[in-house]
Image (cartoon, rainbow, N blue to C red; front, top):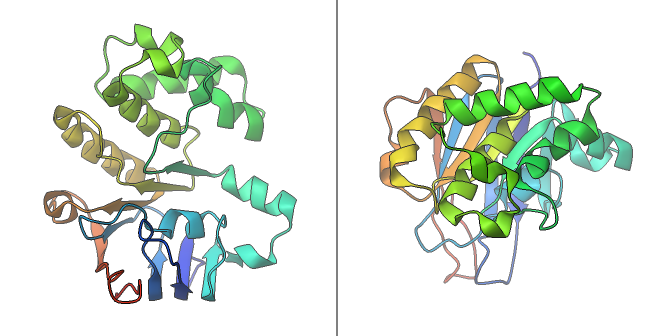
Length: 232
């Protein structure tokens, strides 16, 4: 059996924060070209799955592996190189305020690859069009001058740049225009056909149960009122 792109092996992560959900004995194997849907309760403000999947948080027990290697066994250079192969979206926007949206989106490709500027720009605008944005003059503005709904869609573009090995998305539908959801679903399908492994965390039943996504499904019940313990 080939190595999974992302693998959680009996992972536990405890927290005392009411805003973050703990996890207990979480195991899954995400292969290239597959979509994993994680369903959390509606009152979950933050689940640490993306942090753990990126090696930004260390599990209290178990192991998180990326491309066959445990994050805990990597040195700083290995961690940085591997994170450069992952597109991600967090619950809250993460834009550098003194750069334009366009420069923000290009940043990972400029930092982690040797691609020429023309190829980065060409891919970026192809993704913008694929996600249904036709009037994108605001992409040249700084983030605080762009509507939050539009920024959310631009986050989808940023996470998709460079044909990433994995795309980890935490509630990407939150704050996005409702009409854009089908475009995001179709985009995820396109990414999976390119062998990107996609993890999509949501609290919406209609997305979790969407019949157009060929996916694995895991439902996480928020148990933070019972010692902050999450049950899988």
